[in-house]
Length: 114
Image (cartoon, rainbow, N blue to C red; front, side, top):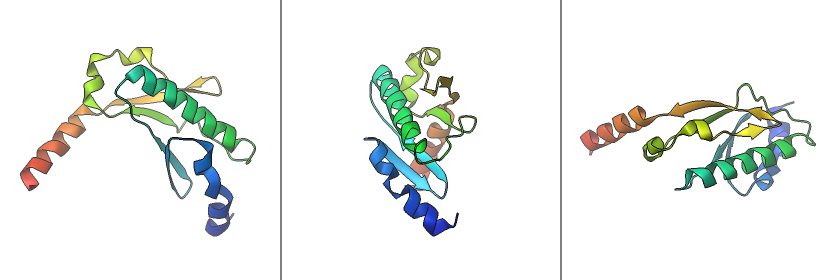
């Protein structure tokens, strides 16, 4: 399938979820945020399963081996993330984990550059 045909084919992917979706080539990223981690994971499970339900009738595959769950906000450190998982098609997605150190480094670099 050529790039233009693919783009036309997946053009309505954003309608599959009320959450933010970023697509680049054949990669799709869901962005969700919430101050409450429990609500965040409820929304994440809803969003990924809505996306999965859009993929299936459109004859596209969601590669659950390459699909990851990542928590970016360092404030979530007070939570036990083992209690929170994202599931799609009865499979628990792998978690990349917290990236607090990266955020600290980026904040430090920003303070130097400003």
